[in-house]
Length: 341
Image 1 (cartoon, helix red, strand yellow):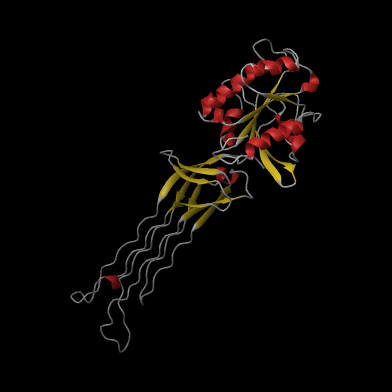
Image 2 (tube, helix red, strand yellow):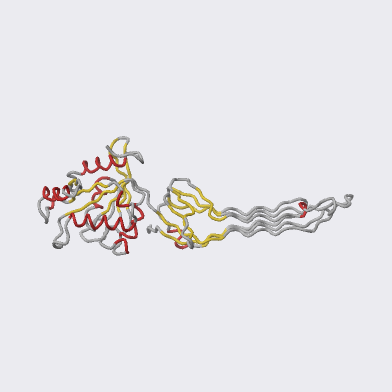
């Protein structure tokens, strides 16, 4: 199924039914009086988060959603039937925003979370509401009110505990394959990951977390360069980030693990100021394939000189992977608002 994480839709709630101006007319009941019922309420439109969905593809093609109008009132004190509500189901983690103002309408961060998108119109009043001692035969009634209509933007933000980021071909997808049952594509060319991939990592019998692999970031990603900028929103809610760097490339002195680290963090800060402050675990990957800018110990010292502790691993062989998972679990298992030990 194609991964779609943005969609624009229109929602139109139903109009309320008109009230009725009716009079009771039965044999042997003279001057029966008014008996017009109210109109039914128009149908409303709701949105519900469903954990069984993982894409907004349904709303890429079905853009307009309308609820039914309420029925008009009838005689014999019969009220009109209300219009049926429309229930839109979206993946957990979907944000609903007003497409024109950008205001947040709903944040559906939990399975079963539900929000009202457009309220149906109130039904009109029948003439039974207008009778009085001086108005015995009222012919007044009111029309039903129109339902709400609005244009909305749906934006999916994948919910994960840990988000992977780094330059293309840093080994993010290989790491996900090594620690979970997810099978993202792995190849020896950049941008093999085209869509976010989620994997469940179990670190103990009763301890697990979800890791999100997003397409690689490059310089200028926050302004639209490369593919990763389209998916940066998916790491905004992560409790920790795993920053993977590697040193097997031969692109020249302008590329190094430390330079790549600075570039990616600058892009995170440019996209969302608080994102670069999310707790990170920095790891040098592909240590089994050698390095181009000094030994592993020299690279570790270069990071340490900047106050950045760095781990080492080979996601392909499994060397050092457990230590990385332990460091991530330390950050993820900390309660919000407290600091890791």
